[in-house]
Amino acid sequence: MADESDPRRADRVDLHGGDWLELNRALWDELVPIHVASAMYDQSDLRAGTARLLPMEQQELDQLLPDGLTGIRVLHLQCHFGGDSLAIAQQGASVVGIDFSKPAILQARALAREVGLDGRARFVHANVYDARHILPEPESFDLVYTTWGTVGWLPDLDEWARIIAWYLKPGGALYFADGHPTAHVFDSSGSELPKFVYAYDTDGVADIVNESDDYADETATTTNTVTHEWMHPLSEIVTALQAAGLAIEFLHEHYEVPWKMYDSLVDHGNGLYGWPGKKWLPLGLSIGARA
Image (cartoon, rainbow, N blue to C red; front, side, top):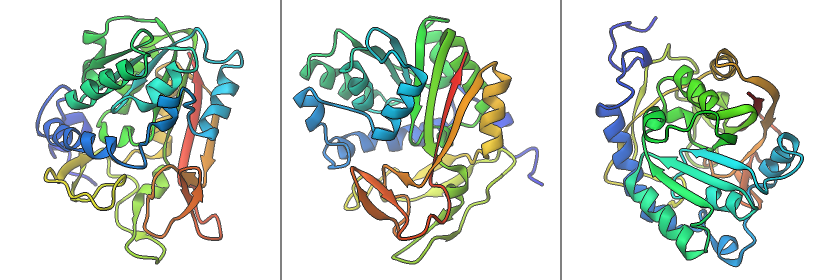
């Protein structure tokens, strides 16, 4: 059992400030120029006017939104420096992106101006948990989109899900994709299959991680190395969304992810990495839900 007085517990954490938020923000502020310069976040297609999301995401968004993205209003939570936000805007949507990193938001605004999408894409600097105060627009979005490396940085998924539901119009959709919770218990070094490192369920207590490498650029070394990260079992994610009043339309597991989650994964092309040989366990997860 976890110590119920542990300040790293989600129910003890100040969602609007504190060491966890400042340490995590310092890392993500530092990562912005690294990611902008990396091959993984290359924006050539966006600059060419042909940007698309991952094929899996495009297919699943077609399932949620059979009439396409044109003319709909999208809220992108934890948007980083806006590459996916602008890919969605380039397909005809109006997009608001939110991120807690000011350098990321400034870069997103600059990129939007560069590619001529600043009329359809707006970027707001905010911690997710402060979003309703900074962007007070309830029931105003057709789609909330949030993908890849998001909920592990958030202590409280119940509040996360309530925020999503608050923003969605009646009948509006959530599209969520991330690393599969079971995959996050492992880590690896070299070509060997990964080994257990993290517990699947920590009773809401953050893992304090001290790492200086970066998933997007293996040559990069960060100076802000200490972060607070939360493990969220699959049942916690689904239950939080349902408790907020969202109806799950699909839950898919995937054996590829858009970054090299472990050293032992191999490049499957199109920016995706997967297992060598067998499908040992799912690496990714996607959920479509409806308000």
